[in-house]
Length: 272
Length: 204
Image 1 (tube, rainbow over the protein chains, first blue to last red):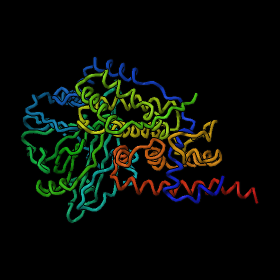
Image 2 (cartoon, chains in turn cyan, green):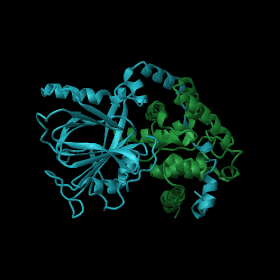
Image 3 (cartoon, helix red, strand yellow):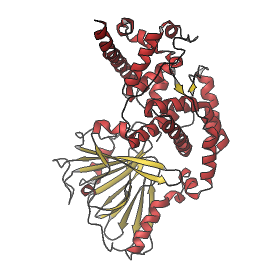
Image 4 (tube, rainbow over the protein chains, first blue to last red):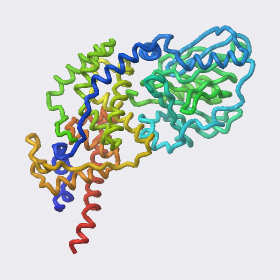
């Protein structure tokens, strides 16, 4: 090799690289347009895929079906009073009190593959969007869930956790002060079951956008790479959407303080 | 079997993107045929991007297929007027990364120079000026880069995308493209030095 390459400055090396594509033995490009079209047409005959393209209640899909089965199994076949859909999270409010809540809190289980925060973008395919007013989280996980079994489309999420501090008080029953879930895409992969008598809930706003706020212990059903998990939520939860993501922030904070944190979360736009 | 097609799209960007935009608008409305046309227009560069990430032809083909299907599903979220190519390349690269993660492939790619190495590319007198040895060394060094560096170099130089389009494809601000490029070129030089060391030792 000549020393010429190593002696080049950025502009010269850039020039040398331009057009080098024709010097590379690229593997032959497969023609995929027709097979992609056929796959899509085949899938569009499937109600599940049609649902995934529509922003209508029919998009509730597998997860809600799972939740319904669990409810039936638990003998809690009560009529749902209210269903709220906010991106990746569906919220169902049941009349009365919950029969039995799960005993496992969110931070008791692996929330995916634990990774260094610095590698979140590389592994998840999108960067972790974090609040700017608090220190970096001490733990980060990436997980994915198949959101359409036929097309094997997966929805990914990054979960970040912060230890308790004076500004982020410990969430009851956990060893953390805050948990932020960042769900990719529009697919529903989480469902909350609230009870009319034991939970306070309502719509609110984060940066002018519609959001949801709830307090009181309740159940979170989370679709993961390893299947669905029923988890106990003891903190106060704020859910909102921004930049193609759905965010779920759990803290012991009051609504206004939680919204203050949420409004500093600014995701880069991502195509999913 | 090798592909010597030039996938850099040198048509005026405005013309290409307006054709893409018209097809994308129809695809958003559920016109699968229009989406197939978009796939056909971009499958070449998409496949090369996937291959640069996964380093395996079969995995790259699967990643591209899945990525395009996923892109179709995501069309309702595609902003009207946005450029389709960088948007879909982000999906392709993400899908390829996930495949590489699943297959636990190590980073690094066996890039090889063409047997006709040194053949002049009419659009690039600089590359034509490279002798065969330098071209082979540069291609090999590219293959040794981390995927992140390799992609930014490929987008900007091999595929001749503008800095703005490269930024869109990587999902980073324009300034980050400049800093990533600079770091990637520094690492490329470092790889060239590492590769030269054994040969130079033998020469002594």
